[in-house]
Every structure is written in C-alpha cells, then in structure tokens.
Length: 387
Image 1: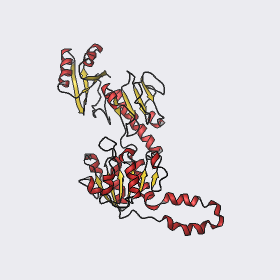
Image 2: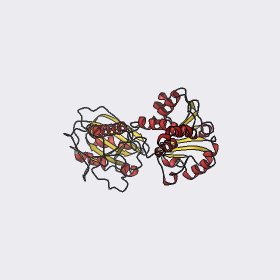
Image 3: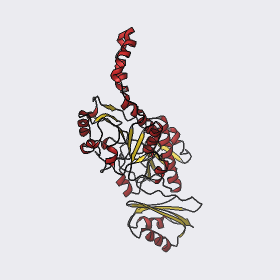
C-alpha cells in the first residue's frame, strides 16, 4: 500500500488514477511515499525519510526545494503542457484586451446605470473614447517556444497575425509542431525591434530575471503591447512603468500583478487566471497521478525536473532502481558490486541529467536487503530501492 499525501486540493479525476486498493490518499501523514501538490510551498517543510517522489500538478516548481530533493534521491515531477491550452486561450484573450480597451469600456458602461433612458445615447456618444486597433496584420513576437509558446504562435497565425519566434533552445518536438509561417529570430534584439506585440513564455531563471529592462525597452517600437503569462519576475517593473510613461509601452497585461502595478491605467492585472480552468486542473492532476503511479510501481520516470526520463518495460523480474550523482565509474561500481554478490542482471538502462543519473536494473533471480544496502552505502548513490 502506497501512501500519497496531498498538500493542495487535487482534482478527483486525477486521484482516481491511484486505485484505493493500492493507494491511501491523505492530507495528513508522517510517512508518505509520495506527495501531490499544486502551489503549496515546501521549502520550510521537513522532508520525510519515506518520501520517494513529488508530483507537481502544474509546470512551475519554484515552491519545491529541488536541490534538497535531489540530494535525497526524491524524484520531482511536473506536468508540462497539461495546462497549455488554458494559458494559450488567456493569452489570445489578452491580445484583444490590450488592443481594444475593453476593460476601460466595460467599467465606463457599468457607471452609466443611474442614467436611465439616456444610456443608449450616452453609449453611442462615448464609445469613441475606447476605440482600439485590430490584431490582424500586426506583428507578434513570441519569446519562448515551448508547449504554450508554440500554441500561441500557431493560433496567432490563424488569426492573421505575422509571428516572429525566438527560442535558442527550442526542442525538436516543439519545432515539429511550430507552423512554418512563423519567422525565426536569430537574436532577441531582432525580434524586439520589429514587433507590435510581445508575449513571454519562458521560465524564470537567474539569466532571465528582469530580462525586459531599460535596455530592452529602448529597442522596442513605440506603443508596443506586452503580455506576460509566464512569470512576473521576467519584467523589471520599475523600468516598465518608465517605458509606459514615455509611450514606449502602450499596454502591459500580466498574470502576476505586484502591488506597484495596480492602479495604473496602461496595466491590465489578471489575478493569475492563465491555467485556472476546470480542464487545466483536471489535466494536470491526471498527468501528475499517472507519472507518480508509473514511478512508484514500475520505477519509470517521465517529466522529472531533477532526474532524467528513464523507462523500461516491466517484466516479472525483481526491479532495482538506483539514483546517483552523475560522476565517472558509478555504473561500473554498481554492476561490479552486484556481480560480487552473485546477483545477475537480466536487463538494465542508465540515463543522466545534469548532476544526477538514474538506473533501472531488472534482476535475474533474487536480491536481498543486505545487498541493496551495500549499493546504498556506495559513495555517490543517493537512492536505491527494490520494487
């Protein structure tokens, strides 16, 4: 019986993928095998010694202590792409919000309630104050071509926009999905100087923090509209407000409103609604639960942020999983130790990612807890477990 602790409300449709005859789902336990969460901040949480895996029902993992988890051999999963359509639709909506002054117009119309029969006439006379522009034929710059960025770029093409994309690390899968009509920018500066709209779809890292700053705003066309449904820290808020004052930025729509951005006429603050759809929450929960189940039962890893993807078809053979630091001679040490213990390997796969590596080893015969402990005691090994 596996114990899975939920630190946030997880959609029932996802939890249903963990059959109750094999899984105990609880909000309170001192010895979970796995944790499912969304936005709960784990940095101050003591990680239980029983914990093997964490499933984040969403893409961002800033709320999880990745370094500490890696050191303890705890595999952290996220769900890239599961909420992509929800975010994409919000970005498309924001293209119109930033272009047609819809928000101000609606607020103004609501204020006419006391005008009685004069409302229709006032609406006709006042509508010109909220005129905007159409997006068709305008240039959109998409910075970051992952699952969401590609979907935004493709749909913007379908809406009649000219799209320029920039992502020096675009994956093969994303490249295959990207419309051939999307122009490729070889440098970020080339994109910034050409487009009427900019949408951000990249992670918040030390090298991307505050990437839209005074220098980058100076490169942009006057009146550019910026959409940020990725991470708030990507934009320097002080530099942004200066750019708005100077007319460089006409509108900024953000899903991450900070206090200094509220009350500004040219800033449309969205209360983190990008992935807030029933479908997104369901998709994330299903994906996270499936990945945890595949790992706990068969040792397979898909969409881990701290260990490599590693899968091998499960057979009737006992399966040993081993996580270790990605340093020379680790595989030979593990296999030699097994050979010295007269443990025969039926099949094996080894993958690495950054500072860590992962092994799935199917045993031909039996292996004892004492023999597994010897692997655990090997310098560089952070986790070893018999499934």
